[in-house]
Structure formats: C-alpha cells, structure tokens
Length: 306
Image (tube, rainbow, N blue to C red; front, side, top):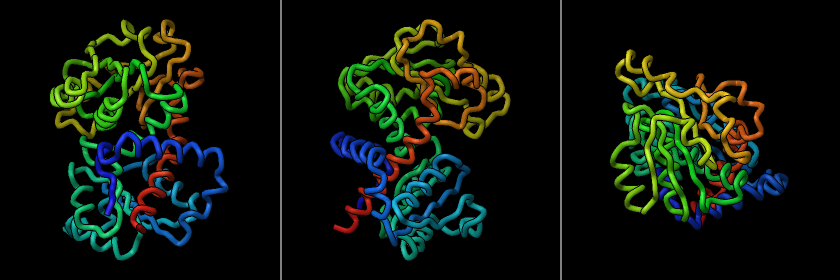
C-alpha cells in the first residue's frame, strides 16, 4: 500500500507528475469533479490546523468525494488512550484514504504500517510536512517556471521549522540550487540537515543573521514564524519571536521578481503592508495547496486500486 510520509517517498519524476496533474486541475477543473465519487477521506488531526485540514477537505470535495474525521485529539478515542495503530486499523474500515497530523514525530508512519488504506502525513511534530512541501514546489513551479538555478533564502525558525526541513530536502534534488539560511544563532538549521542534505548533495549554502544584507541575491524568500508550540521555555520564545519582521522598506533592494513565500499561519513576521506587493505569494500558496492535494489524493487512490 502506497502512502506519503516523507517527501523522499516520491521520486523527482513522481513529484513532477503531481505538479503536472495539479496544473491540469487548475486549467481543467471540470475534468476532475467526479474522479473521487463515492470515496471517503478521513482527516485525523491530533493537532490544531486551519489550512492543511481544510485544504484536504476542500480537495476531496472538489474531486467529488466526501470527508469524515476529527480536528482535535480530545474529539477522538485517543483521549481514552487508544493507540495510533488501533486508530489506523479502525479508520481503514470506514474510509478509503487518511490524512493525519500528529504532534509526535513518526506517528503517521506507525499509522501507515497498520492501515490497509493509503496514509498521508499532514505534519508530524517538528519532523516532516510533505504536503506543504508539495504546495511549496507547485508555488515555485508556477511563479518561477521551474526549479533550476534558484537562490532560496529561508528566514526565521530554521531549527524547528518542519516546512523548511522538508523543502530543503526536496530542492536538493534539483540542479543549480543555492541556499541562504537566515536565523538567530539559537534557531539555526540543525547540523544533521546541513550534513545529510546540503553537503551530501553538494548544495552551496551560507548562514547569516542579517536578512537585508542578502536580500538582493534572493529569487525566493521563504519566511517562517517562530513557533511557540515547539519551545519548552516561554522566555526563549518571547526573546526570539520578533527576530525578523519583513516590512516594505526591507524589500527596496530585492529583485523585482522575488517570490515571497510563507507556510502560514503568520503572526507578525510579515507586515500586512507587504500583502499588496505583487511579489507576495503566500496566499497564492494556500490556493495551490488545495490543487496539489487533489493531485496527491488521486495518485494514491489510483495506485491503491491497481
């Protein structure tokens, strides 16, 4: 049974096929409106979510399917102590495909090992968020025309940011990528990602604490919030939460075709004054997320039926 737990579960060719399908869905929505008729998606969200959960639900509904599930752990039998494995086995009796978000790293993998239907990792702790990565890749594809020869700046919480970790891993498989890591010292990209992804794949990168100094180099600026829920110490969170705030004046020396991205939710790291800048792509990202999840649901359901 095919599932998506980590972005590397799919080859570059398969990712490119998903992007092609998503682009076709955007161009020809009527062609897909009944492709999942009588199919059910179960959204098992043990952790709060707005965009990811609702985009999965919108994706399945627009494919002609239906949705069951829960949006908080206390609304499920997990509150009674049921294991992830047993939950997955149970939901397999009711649905055709599962989208799971869980605060514990590895929980969607456990679900996939015990379910008899495909499982999609919709985020597991600070570990992986592969469908956000697919969303990011579709955004880059549509806004920049491809993935080759791009300088990508990642700014903010690079230590706990699962979206950053997954996107760096995905981009490392394309040629000509340069990475710029912008963060406070306390929130630097983990050394294992630098070693196992960037260095291993020969991706040039540099680290800095100064966003404005590298702004003119960037083709893409990927902003992230400092995540309160990943901190054990409230004082550390409060000290670091306003480390980088993107304002119009900081974009004066940026490229005219810079693509500004953010996985959202935003707190205050991008000023609302930037929203009207044509380079702001983060709300387009939200919409692209629905289309790439439609493509993913189709792929996994079609493979399950083979």
